[in-house]
Length: 523
Image (spheres, rainbow, N blue to C red):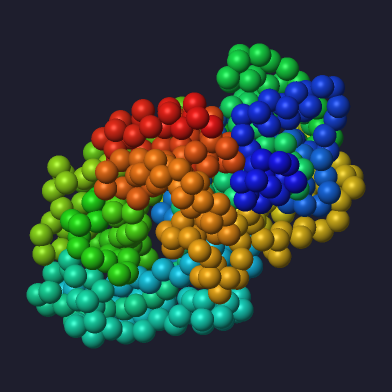
């Protein structure tokens, strides 16, 4: 345990800061050879780094930007049980999703992943036949929960709601003609980028060298040519095996791989616009039998509304723009169930992520709609021996990582046993009863788990750190300072756009920028 970890209350060996990055980048490029180089530090890449390090392999993991810079910070924050895949006949994907949801909720990250209730309001736009179909789906989803051995205490069973109950849980929904509702449950992560941060820090605690702002320029089976994006210096990282976990950018590093990105857009609304929302909402998309717009209260004064599923053509951007057509679509579907539709000028922000779907269609063909492409993941080994993992979804990152490391171990005869990650708690994890006893605010416990007491102690020792970063938002200066000292935050965008979600509202981001710079200097 380092002196910094011990004195600050961080998990032993898990603290990532600028000084550690400098040391470990030097050791990764000194001519020695690591067992495994991981390129990409989203959920899957960070999961690969943890899986390999937990098996005793020496690991270097790099990303051109930051932890969770790409798709892994733009999800709906849901840990799905696989109901949509069950409806599409993808039984193996559905079962895998339910199993991995249970792993997160009961063993590896109960501090970050909890049950989220959803109401499907039975408005006049939902026919009785559609309601019956949805109810059958929710019951089938509960069977998935049972097959995955997730206790009912963790995920309650679905049930029908009377109209009065539906109005209580969904007060913004139009009451005229409301017949009731359907209540279902799924998993929800407090924040997807925080999950990735926990994965990366847990990997670091097992000895992985986790290096952000290090861009892979070229890959082969023996390692990578890289550029340090902070200094511009270039060099080589040698490794016995390489895993490409760069998501939608994977095809740019390995020839012959075709990824078909799909854009998922969310709107950001002030929560007061929709009133108190004890539950999220499922709103059926007109003309679709198995597609919903989701209303997702975040607990920080904001509510997300998403999401779209649109193909993206051409060059893949670092950060996707949100087209007005996506915003209009989401507002239209949302407005179909509200007493007072949300106006365009009431949208405080919007964000879009790109799903890395594997394109299996014949070259030159139109292919399937992106919404119809399977969410199965694939692990592919190139002729040169580079292992690429692509496809899948946030919920199944652990299984994707395990399969990728299995492939690298087999292809390159690395000295490693089976994966232990299904039973390996992430940084901050503890039994729910132990988390409830922590002497720290509940909001911090849901974001930091057992480390919440250390974050809270920062603010107790220095009351200036207890101040919110911006008025009306719960994130404090102490959380920014913690991110600089322990969570690999190197620049303001790391703090505002990923370690916290202040940046999803442009006005809030601008207001918080100076404080972010101050905390970086203080770190």
